[in-house]
Length: 220
Figure 1 (spheres, one colour):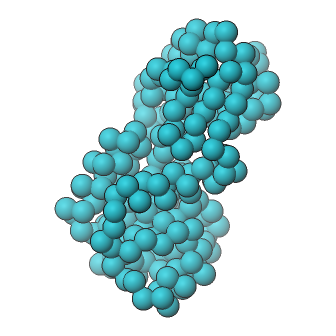
Figure 2 (tube, one colour; figure 1 turned 45 degrees about the horizontal axis):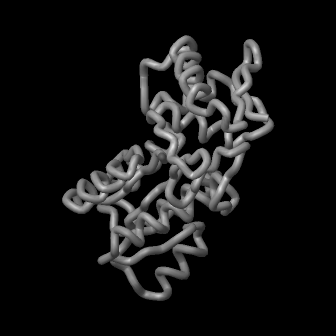
Figure 3 (cartoon, rainbow, N blue to C red; figure 1 turned 90 degrees about the horizontal axis):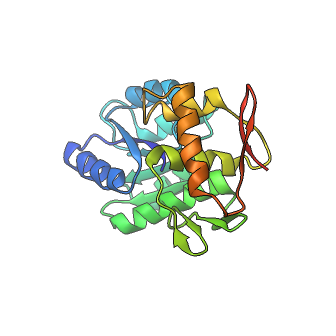
């Protein structure tokens, strides 16, 4: 599950692609201008930006260049009809992490997104282990003893955050802020209930979520 910004002015393409990515479990915000990209990335903590170069108000390469000048390090995948080598080279040199030309295969796009997120979140590891719990970063699923763990969206996000920072405390306010895009009703009490349910599902896996009183949670 990732929080992504799609900058695409073709409404039909943007709606179809957003629907596909949401079906894969991601949260998508759609914008259609370079100005909107700047405003959205300033206001939200996205995991990735999918950027068209043919935006109506500003060339996408200028938008990309400004994102990097502003210090925004999130992965950017350019999705464009421009297939000239010089455009690819300039896009990558300006800070894009990947470049895919239209028309494209949706399966390939999703694979490229997974690869970018895997590099950003998991240092390119395809499996993350804690006891007998395994997170498959390719399939984006959790397993215990080769059996998939059935998790709610909130449980998934919390467990992913804890595994990303294994050995470090993840503060409650960080988790609540991260979950805000998914669930605006999340409170400290609600978070404790979700973690309680999550512990039950991880019972006997050897992956133990410990409470750090007054602060948050940690997987040692």
